[in-house]
Image (tube, rainbow, N blue to C red; front, side, top):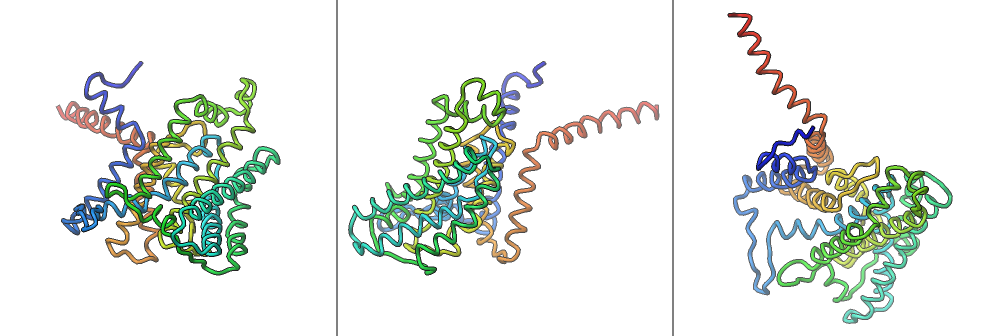
Length: 357
């Protein structure tokens, strides 16, 4: 029996059941809170150079690297895995790019920027392949496999940079994070384009269904002819590459890699974005649109914390309260409990009236 009402009400119920809708609602709520504190918070102005300027634009810029690692994490989680190494891959990618650009010393060279990007893609893809080998060939648990690279990656970045924060100058590389396209931040447009390409790849082909199949039941998927090992290699390498691109975004902003802070604990933000977007950590289903919305929510939350002047020591607790409230709203069990309570209360009152009569 279908318990969804027909017509507009049924359509509304169907929309509410999409978990990422709650993420959109949370973004709107945070923006309203900021708007109450500053009525001009959502104002977007045009600078003398024709660039769009405003808090919303800043949020989109900050969301770009989180979008990259969240989308990669989303696909890995779909296979019933996890990738805790994305933050460390980011700092390794930044270290490779900055060391190369500083050694070349060509601040105006587009070719040097392209070579740096290629190096980042190759190195981060190789690190993703290491995770894939440990998971699919060696047979280690994804949590343990990626934890190894999470711990080793930052040490590798320190080896690459000799333990120093490395800076470089290259206008083309800097444009990736600081440039504008029709006034919009290039970093966000690049991230959005990559998200769309990945989404089309997995949803317009059988790849998405195969990822969900091995996440639901790997044995049944194998019997159906799905090559689990090849798919795991694909998703972990892609997760590594996307984390490397996130590393480019993070370092190109200031043209410096901080071996201690770049990508620090961003794997937790990626996991939160995935969960907020409606992807189950149990695997089997994924939602790239939801992960993208979750990434924007995380960026909005970070900006809200700064705007409200919350101390850095209280920031994790503030974020935890928001995330817990959102996850509870997404829970079908919690919503069912509220519906049952609303139905039971009028019945109880009617019964009291009958007894009193």
